[in-house]
Amino acid sequence: MPELYVYMPRAPQEAFRSTLRTCLSRRVHMSYDDDRPATFNILVDGRPREDDLTASPALRTVIIPFAGVPAATGELLRRCQHLNFHNLHHNAAPTAEMAMGLLLSAAKRIVPADRALRRGDWRPRYTDDDTPLLEGKTAVILGYGAIGQRLARFCLAMGLRVEAVRRRATKTGRQGDVTVHPAAALDDALRRAEVLLLALPHTPETDGLLSGARLDLLPVGCVVVNVARGAIIHERALFERLRDGRLGAAGLDVWWRYPRVDSDDPEAGEAARRLTPPSRFPFGGLPNVVLSPHRAGHGAMTETLRAQHLADLLNAAAAGRELWNRIDPDAGY
Image (cartoon, rainbow, N blue to C red):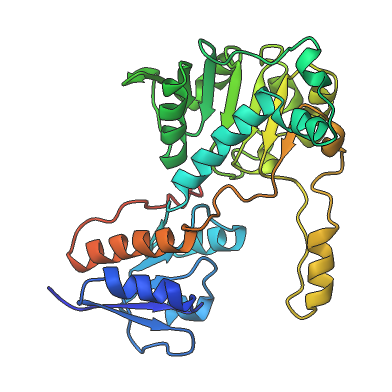
């Protein structure tokens, strides 16, 4: 088999490189940072520059080393359809685990009870308890990729009925114990969603997908969990329905506002991280909402998993096998 040359312009930490060295085939040769070779077959970069894409006549594949496609990269992807773009789903397991944590925390009102008991206040034990029983309810998962399929397994283990909506599905059908619907069946699926889990990519097609009108299709008391992107749900509509009790609870890991961090001004960046509200609306004042600062895909093993998944993809390329996780330029993921 021929040698494979890979260039990664954004040099990773040494722990990442060490994992790659352990896992990679000897036929795969890595270059980093300013050490760009004259010829390379694969570029690993989530935000590639034009000059990197044109630097090597042998370049055929670009790997985005995370899930999702940044907007600027999406533009390149559509212009460079002679290249194959792939990404990694190394964070699928931790993201699915966080989604289930948010679901249980929000549905069972764990955070308000915790805050009260820290003050010595036992009253939540003696008040009327409106926390729902999840067993036997219907969970609808929007997005049935690596994360969504893990969520389905978790929900089934908890005794929920599970349905999913997947863009690539052409008709409604069963996949094991899960009923999978095409995107055209979204509204009908929402009407049955006593639990709604969002695990779909943010694209022009999904931007604002859950409008106020669609949120009103959900059964009263539905618990919403979003580990996808904030912009998929209409911000004001979600806040108002949670505030008014139309929706029962929400666990949100993704938002509409993020800190603007200037790498040239570390102090300002630190201040932004400490003092940026995640929304125009006071979600933090709602007792039925659990807030998480977009950390579902992060954890102690994140970079190790990223390196292992990248190594698997590069080893497959070196062996001449077809690569998975290919991105559709038109769909944007």
